[in-house]
Image (cartoon, rainbow, N blue to C red):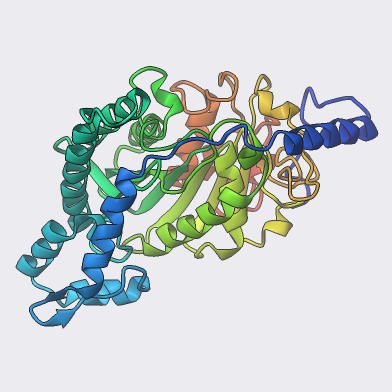
Length: 408
């Protein structure tokens, strides 16, 4: 979008040819070291989920067949709309690892089912943690997973999805999802799984901390607004900085899951995505297929969105971008060669994003810190207060063309 992307202060002055050579060198090094990030993925959750799916496939409720676990959202919604409260409860209690992940099922029912699913998975991992036939490392991992599942199952938590398969996938809601006028989704990057979904130390580097911080900022800025924020670790993210993080393979699967999430959200609330690091790759891949209710895609510390420009994303959503001057992601080559790399820099003038201030943010993980310009802007976008968004350029460039703002 012309005029929306002013030059970035501190842009890399090195000649383009040199940057390209450096990028190619990085690509060749990564290709030569494939396997850096290969990790053991727990198998207990896999068997637990598989058993639940197999049982669901042949089950009936009062003589009625159940919809397939991968049925379209509308099919699932119609099915549950035709059940009474007792029937819904029986399915949630009997098949928690299916009902808790069914897009189209009522949110409150999914919360209830996932509480039971977490309790089941916690018991399995607790038993594994004391199984002397396992290696000490596997017992330690099982113990950590057991404690994490117990934490997620604490009263009052609203777990929208939970799948213990592999390293695990999970999503949590802050606020009232059914009554929200606007919904924000935090899409995290590498090293995100069920164990790192929340952290007691460095809290704001984990999805739960990011989402809580955004939700609190929204409530402070617009106390009368009805918003909900989702901490979404609903895809298998790369582990570490290796080949998985340098390619779009995991982003492809993540994009499909993100599309399904946004299509299944209740009501007609507008949706904003807040995509950090590799999460911005997921959002970029998903952009063309997102429902129109997704009005804004915000990327922070992005290595690229696997597109050359905003136009190349083929989305009707507004695309915003920010990056702290000390963020190491700026040194990642913004190219794509043979499937490695994620393409153009979203904060470059040529890309065409609406550039946001991130004043006060520190390094790659500081964008959701209270008091930063980035979090303040995220909260404004999440509540629809576009007229007070602060642009990176200090003028109204990033607000131009938005109805009701000073830049309109």
